[in-house]
Image (cartoon, rainbow, N blue to C red; front, side, top):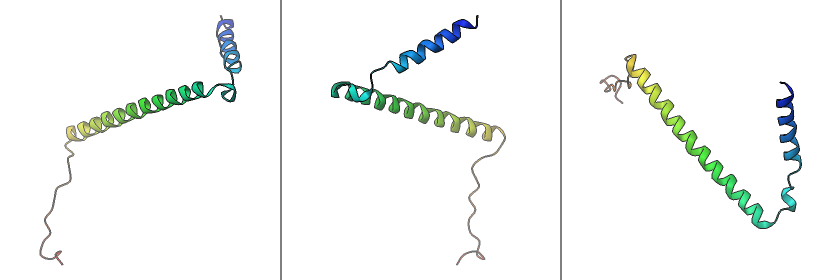
Length: 82
């Protein structure tokens, strides 16, 4: 049973090593790779933004459930006015 994961790993390593180097690819292939990388980066940024938004909403909900809200706004007293 241990042979199957080892063979799969070996196959992935061989596939990665046998890929044509970027320098040998044509300009069109390089431009396509750059476009794919840019698209992947944009997708990751959008996913990160959504995750941050969801996390902030969860934190706000937890704080509200615990009775912790926005800080109270205090008006300055005569002693603190300059």
